[in-house]
Image (cartoon, rainbow, N blue to C red):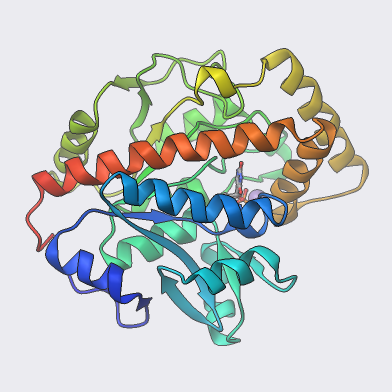
Length: 310
Ligand code: PSU
Ligand code: MN
């Protein structure tokens, strides 16, 4: 497919997509709003390097001066990680950030959509948005879920952290027809920990089987994404007893301070880093690295099954 004309692709990404070289999309909210500077920028560069070592081309996605960028330069990554005026941009925010020629860091939802418009089918992130705790009264559910229901991209993440309601998130994904796959595990992982107490709805153990699922889904015309839940390596995980208490404290503070809407996830992530004395940041970076390795392998396996024109 031809990339949408409103997108600005780097020459490297454009060439890779044209000749069938595997490409892996990466999001930017995790850089601008998910981790503190300068670790965020170092993480973003390192993850791009891991994708390259795995034989794929990284395409970090963001909006700069109102232009959706597919692939970023080193200077652009630095800007996204350090500038104070980078908005968190989900699907509903895309028209505004483009019209006002502003900078925006894209969430899972908007990164998925821009990746699909470029012709990229594999996307690596850390954690997915989902149904928030208390959503039965607040109705706070991430647009990541609706986007997964409609856009054809496989999203590699480390599961859903318990700042969200994991059970309700899995229910919503089932309703939306989104396959949720435990990679090498029968248990759905909870980001900082390998366990969540919830079973993974299905299990796959190789990139080749994941790629075959992508082909089967989209060849049948079943639109929408696939969630690949890849547990954090055992050596890097946080014990659930530790992290659950920290998350409960951060959640209580968010209620006390009246934080709502798009500000909740960045607030909670920041407080979890502080309350854990930086431990959660190390786990977060480790799981993104692990996802990047799988992302490169999956993009490679998928490219092997897919003619260049698709
Ligand atoms: N979870 C993380 N780190 C993140 C996010 C979630 O551990 O950076 C970001 C992702 O970009 C995700 C977004 O798409 O938060 C979800 O925000 P919301 O719930 O406002 O849709
Ligand atoms: Mn929300």
